[in-house]
Length: 482
Ligand SMILES: *Cc1c(COP(=O)(O)O)cnc(C)c1O
Image (cartoon, rainbow, N blue to C red):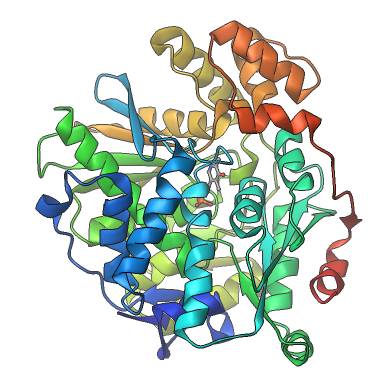
């Protein structure tokens, strides 16, 4: 299996190279040249880690299958406490795929606990011996998940940039308390797009690359633009489908809809990839918060980021430039020329419009809906009162969108974070008010619901804060070259 750039089909690389490079030269993203066929019968009874290994070996064809099996067993076994891919029934025909049972309590653990192992192995596959410096722009969850995945690994350093005051207290502490000699964490003045644009500029900066190369350092990314992030996310769509069939909630071969709380479009794109491999996925519903650029795009075909940016209670979806959408546009059009032109328009004017054929193909596979903070809070309360199901604000946005987009098919909502990562907002949704501190709110939320907070979040209060530096976006380059 080879990978090509969304902006230049003549750039073709192996899986290892796609993972080591992150971005393609010229700013494109690497996509698989074809989609391997799923073997649904053979896969339906596999435990999560074995299913992951089976799917990944079809994409990572220059990796040793035994290595993949070991890496998946290590990643999805003990660290997920036997709850990888757990599906909860919420109501008749409505399910939550709980993706937050990993070490940092967000779905990003699925990719970021595995990806470091893939990167170290990819470098071996390619005979590369330089040091890899990972730069990450994060709206909250990616940062911690990446730090946890890369901390202490040989030959790798990681630097994380998050928007100052753009994350919850818990998210900030998760990052600022990270241990390990090879990690650095910076707050950036501005919002997530400021942090992401700053990091992207460093990746595109040839002088910076030359200077680092002179010191034996090569830059790489852990953002969801990296193929190594995306591939592991395909697995849980299959796993959830098999669990629904097993529970008698879906008929074998009949479609199941999925609703995904979306920011950078990585999670939902993985669902599209599962569908392209042959999983009976009906509609993929893209759920946005008030930063509804994607919902507008799917409705109209106009991507227009020239709009007010809102800080919401679902910060990991506070995104106006949704990077992985580029991959979908490429698959829908099969045209590197069109994609390159649209992406150029986006960076020059902040807006582009896709053609009618592309829009029709998009709307065949994807629905969309959005919900503001008030609607999400009402949904949190409603789900708790009616179903005794507790969810976080990102997941609540998706439950709102799922309600608006239900068909006759069973609906699986991807639950992307533990409610205890956002305890003040969740408690306020249930009780009307919440204490000022996240940790007081965590205790009160447990008291109100009887649900226990994950130990990895409770213990943050006692951990020493290591990183406090705040940078203006123009200093990101200097920090990355330190
Ligand atoms: C990252 C994240 C999302 C958005 O996922 P994308 O792949 O960026 O679309 C949604 N919810 C939570 C909790 C997240 O951490």
